[in-house]
Length: 228
Length: 228
Image (cartoon, rainbow over all chains, first blue to last red):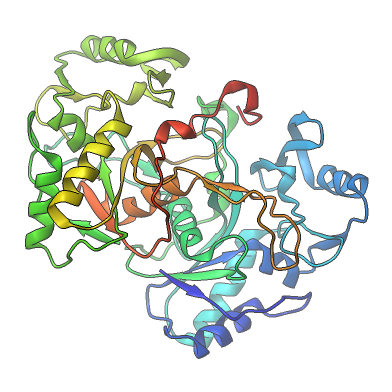
């Protein structure tokens, strides 16, 4: 895993793929076939103009409710919401940190499409076959602490489906569907940090097959969710 | 991340640290200061004798209920349970795959202690300062697919506490507690796979401070869990 450093403040209209390419070109690592680019959603959102002013806490709360398709839980100012994409996260994914002034960052409207755009642009610039994951930091039930997960995917399956695979004793695997893009997003977070201005990482050496995966494939329908 | 290959079937009484050390010694990578060893719980459980016979599905179901401190959900044969450690997972962590014959693997009785034992033994063998994470594969609410998480930790904090840290604009980070050992466990899974007989990985390059962390620190009390 290699952090992509040297990307400054991103503003509306910026070409994220070009920014990544420029930063990688002056960095120590060249893009190679099979690389997975993990990009934190914030620079994607900023480039797509998914920012808003929020001068007061009330403005912020209103933005959260605007972004929420459904409110799952609410306690004081904190809201756990389902986004229009189907993801469950705090404050419908609306963030106040890592942006200047009294502005807030919303999630990309269609993160899978954003990932596909970055992938095709970066593939054109590099000549390499790539996958792209757009990540965000989510809380989760049962366990303390946050982890980075995939909210946008292009070029690979979101879930590594091992159903029908046997273990070395010939017994069917019980662990059959691995959310590999979430593991990759979390892994990339280890080199990106939260406050260091490193908004992307190159992940190399993971075996994946080109496929038309989407992060929305990770949304678990209520009727098959025994954990919620 | 480097997979630790060449560890065969583990049986009761085996010394996991010695097995890891022997496998690493003949492998391409030497243990270095600051390495984090991620070990899947199965070989730890097997070495500790946490296996049982389960000739029938009824035997298996009984073992699951024996291991459960509380049943959270039940649908047909599948049980979501809280283990005695406090973790929420399918079948109270009792596994049927990756073990020969009609046997089942239970979780270690005290995975944090198991991690501490492996850490001190490996540190004695290598002379390096290490952290050890014992991992298992868990499902989760809201999102499809499973990811590897930490069920045992020794030598480092389970949660990277960034409260009080500011971003590059001087604003307090909203993302303040990162479950870094879960991200590391998931990252290690990317090189271990589920059926390839690679039960451990060396993770290098993650910044961590020696600390007396425990995986049970990750158990979120019900009264502060807005997500469940």
